[in-house]
Length: 346
Image 1 (cartoon, rainbow, N blue to C red):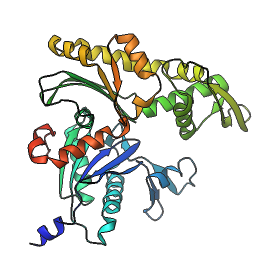
Image 2 (image 1 turned 45 degrees about the vertical axis):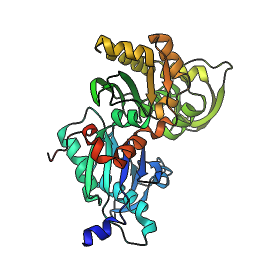
Image 3 (image 1 turned 90 degrees about the vertical axis):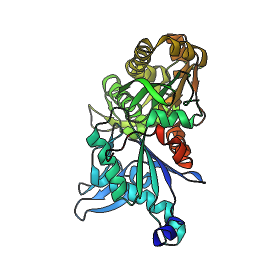
C-alpha cells in the first residue's frame, strides 16, 4: 500500500549519462535537465560543492583541495561514488517540487555499445544507490534512433552516427536490433584536444578546454565556409609564460580537426563495407543520420556526403536524441522492452 502511494509521486526518468553532458527526460514532461557531467568535491571534507553547470565553471580554477572533474570517461563510469552522487543530485532535483515526498523512480539509461558487464553493472548500481527503483539500460545508438523517430522496428536499414562527448558510435539498425556497429574514442572532447594541440604547436599558446570548446562551436567546421571567419582567443604564452592573445581562423581550426574528422568518415565507410547488401540499398536510399552534440560541427554532413556519396541528415536537436529516445521507451516500457540491453541481473 505504501509503495503504491509513493509511486504516485515518483517521476520516472530517461537519462543520457554522457561524458560531457547529462540530460534527464521526465515522464509526461520531456527533457527538464541538461547539465554538464561535472562534479566539484572538497577532498578535505568529502563534501560535494557543486554539480552540473556550477561545477563546470570551476574547471581549471580550483585550489588544490577542490577537484572538479567528470566521473565518466568515453561514456562509462570511471568513478563509481562520484557518479552515484551526481545521479542522486539530478534525481533529487527532479523530485524537488513534490514537497519532500519522493518515490523511487524507474530509470532508463543510455549506455555505449562497447561496454563490459562490469561497466554495465557499475551504471546499474550507481543509479540504484542514487535512489532508482528499477534500472533499464539501452544502447545509445538505439536510443538516438528512437529519439530521431527512425523506423527501428521495421525490416529497413538505418545507419546512425552518434557523435557524443567521449565516443562516436556508428550503428546499422534493423528489426529492433543492431546488425553491426563500430565505435571509436574520437568525439567532442577529442576535437577540443585537437585544437589545444594545434595552438600549442603553431602559436606556442596554451589553451584551456573551455576555450577550445568555444573555438570549436564558434568557428569550427569540417567543410569550408562561404566566407572566412576568425576569432580572438587568449591563453598562456609557452615561451614567456605570460598572457597572450592571438587570432585563429576557421582554416586553422579545420586543419586542427582534419585528422579526427577523417577517422570518423573512414570508420563510417568501414561500417558500410561490412553491412549486408540489402541494408546498404536502404541506407543509400534513406541516407546517413547524424546525432549527438558532435553532429553540430558545421559542414560535417557536407564532408561525409562528399566522401561517401550518400545523403546525410542531421536530426532536429541532435544533442537530446538519446534522452528523448530513452524517454519514448520509458513511456511504453511494456511494449518496447525488447529494445533494451540485457540487465546484468538477468
